[in-house]
Image 1 (cartoon, rainbow, N blue to C red):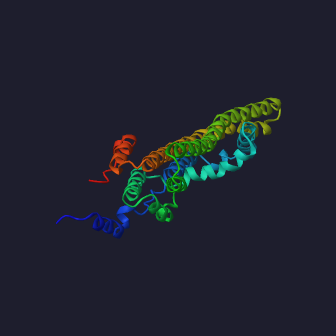
Image 2 (image 1 turned 135 degrees about the horizontal axis):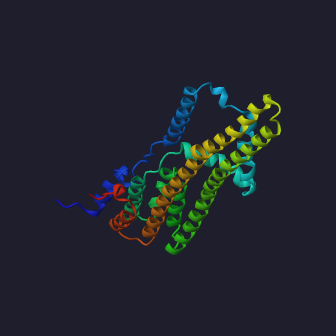
Image 3 (image 1 turned 90 degrees about the vertical axis):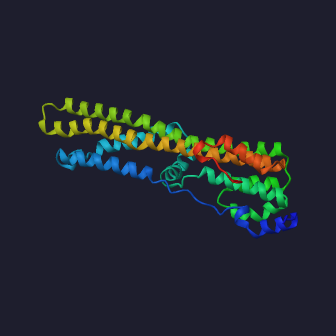
Length: 282
């Protein structure tokens, strides 16, 4: 028996999970903390195999490298950038990885709901989108009948501003990663000067040599085990966020132009990596 359009609409309204799947958050990214913890643990273990761990502790060298790196890095950036850096680091270490194929499925579901029930039906779905503020803004533009070209212009401008803010955090970490070895070298030179200035006093040679060697060690560890990997993780997260936001912009334009949800699915799959492509209507 053929199903009438009215019965089909009733069926769709009775199955909201089909219209808009519940948010499925990605797994919390523990790779950063895992890698950092394992790397530092192996370093400490190697130190213990060679003797006492106390031999690798030197406060003047630590202050020159860590304090000097922070001070020199701050010269290249503004106070507001420095204030945002801790939250950016926390995001890199603790954020939940976005799931691109889920975001794409939800966008197609929104397009299907708009095609069947009109733009105003999307307004009732806004509470289910609160986990993605960018998507909420995009849907609000569609509900308000904003022209597609204006939707894209507004969303592109916001995406560009967001990526610039995130890129600054990565640039700060990369700059700090460049400065840390240099501060270690400066600490080494300071220690050598102290040692050469007091060759007639054997009791000062040991502490001065410790500053010279440990400063280089601290700078290398700080740069290559902490700062540069965090900068790379921020870049990765920015690319993942940019992908999902670009999908959202494409979907908002498609919905505003009242295009077929199936066509939207094809367009989204053209952007998604092969492993992330969706089959919403299959």
